[in-house]
Figure 1 (tube, rainbow, N blue to C red):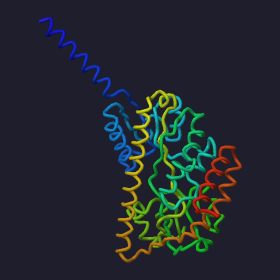
Figure 2: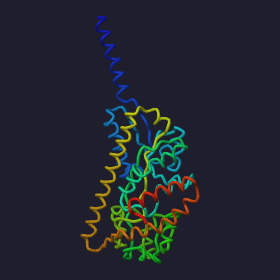
Figure 3: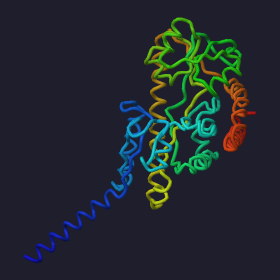
Amino acid sequence: MKITKLASTALALGLVAFGAHAQDYSFRFQSSDPAGNPNFEFQQAWTEDLRKMSDGRVSVEMLPVGTIVDYKETQDAVGAGLIDGHITDTSYFAGKDPAFGLIANPVGAWSDPNEMIDFVENGGGKELMNEMVGPYGLHFIGVTTPGLEAFVSKVPLDGVADLQGVKIRTPEGLIANVFAAAGAAPVNLPASEVFTSLDKGVIDAADYSVFSVNQEVGLNDIAPNPVYPGFHSLPLVEVSMNKDKWDALPADVQKIFEESVKKFQQTQVNALKQRDLDAVKAAEAGGKITVHDWAPEERAKFRGIARGEWQKLASQSPMAQKVYDTLTAYLTDKGLMQ
């Protein structure tokens, strides 16, 4: 009887120990995307991959935007330990240092998501990100992106010269400044007014979203000269967590985090790119939409104009200058900028 009780106790303790080992690390991350958004669904899939890749040792609860704090407050919340990490567009923190805005979306820099990813992973971007978020108590784990935005246009645009005088909806800030420098006439409008403004001729073109989204909401029907792949906007979405909690993780768990984020990145980028390509094919098959693809030299020309605006932003802080120097060195080295 005693042996049986001892065996039962040992088994129970063993199960408890196994249970503790099976999920050694539990975290809460907040997204800047709402539940049901395709980006949020990719983020949820990342948490499942992370759990599987760690054999159940790591669990992340993915919270939709606004669950604990406002989307512009997640950086402070992660640093303070209110949440353990976030997946968010880095540009939301440009008010703290213009460097965040410059690295997050250097308008005109990228013509493909893989260019931005390579810059982050191999061109000094990762080191810059950790230098930027470190003082706020965060560690940058990795990067992803919803992709390169297409450009909505009622008029044919085949290069920089065609932008002259074109009334373009843009948000305020760097993107508006770059288009103005390129000769366009930026108009600040909320996203909710883009369709009506295009339809009524208030604007000729718009910075809006990726091709598949533009197609789904009918923008290409009223503005049948989209530019794809786009030439202007590609957001850097960071996966970061509380630095103290990151530093406390063993090296093997840190590596699993990094590898899972890389898988998440590639899954999201490839899936959304395929969605865009399918939408382009369907749009062209309809016969009413003409897709314009800028030549490399036109993209480089726009990038050169944008560089002047990046430089103005760089002068606003030492960190922004460091981002500018690293970014332009990378683009020059890769032949993307003269």
